[in-house]
Length: 172
Image (cartoon, rainbow, N blue to C red):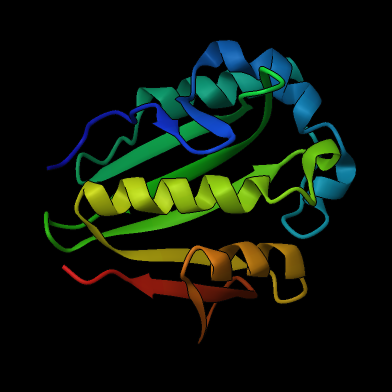
């Protein structure tokens, strides 16, 4: 089954909400720490820049063979947004591949939220026919490596733009 839009995903402490342009204001504050860009480059985006970016993401991939799935991470007990997870999915049904990424704002790091969100994302992808999950992680980003490992991904010898390719193959 190939979804065309992301579902709301629930985990123990989190709700992954499909991304909306209206999330830009709150997410600009969540992602405001320049340290979040230490490994990925760039700088924090202001609310207007995020609105433009989110509008593009919500509109979906211009390639009909590729699906973009984006969520904001809401911490259920505190009713606040704390980060994002995303998946770019391609390939034929039964052989779909997802490239995933995640980010959690600095104030919420170290609580296992990225791991919980990424596990929930990978479980959702598996239920929707994804058989290969890939993440690209900077070789010195130990926290993201730990998240990937906890979600069942393993590092490979492959590199993409200097980042280590992590991989999980899900049995069909």
